Structure formats: C-alpha cells, structure tokens
Length: 76
Image 1 (cartoon, rainbow, N blue to C red):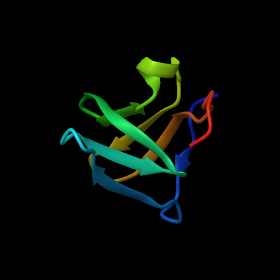
Image 2 (image 1 turned 180 degrees about the vertical axis):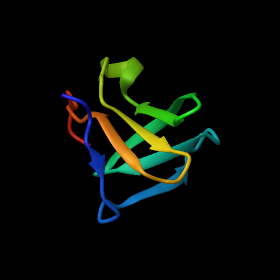
Image 3 (image 1 turned 90 degrees about the vertical axis):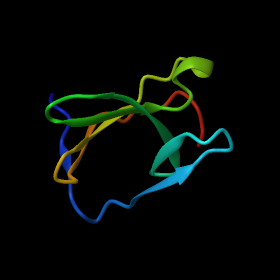
Image 4 (image 1 turned 120 degrees about the horizontal axis):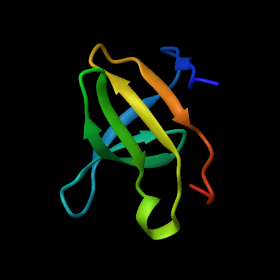
C-alpha cells in the first residue's frame, strides 16, 4: 500500500523548536525535515532518533501532504 494523499481537511502547521529547527505539526506529532527530493520534502517524526519512531510524511511542492508511515510508537 502506498501512502494515501491527505486532503485539505488535514491540519498541518509549522513551529520553530527551541533550537531554531523548523518542525511540521501533523495530528499533534512534530516532524523534522528529513530530506528534499524532486517530489517535495520528506518529514520524519522528531522522535525518530530518540524513540526509533518510523512515522514519516511527504509534503509535495504544491502543498499536498502524503502519509508514508502514520504509525508512531509513542504518544504525541
């Protein structure tokens, strides 16, 4: 199964962390910028390192959010 595209109803917003890093907030979870590709920007759960969380989303160049992996191994 490919990650499904998420409609405009999904609320995403951006915050700046205390360390000055831009974070994407989606479904109450913070995501840190992972890498940029031709398709857009990949964002990985900000707990990827500390908790080995695999959740990831992709924000396309035209602003469409696709969920690659929505499973977090921790609470928001």
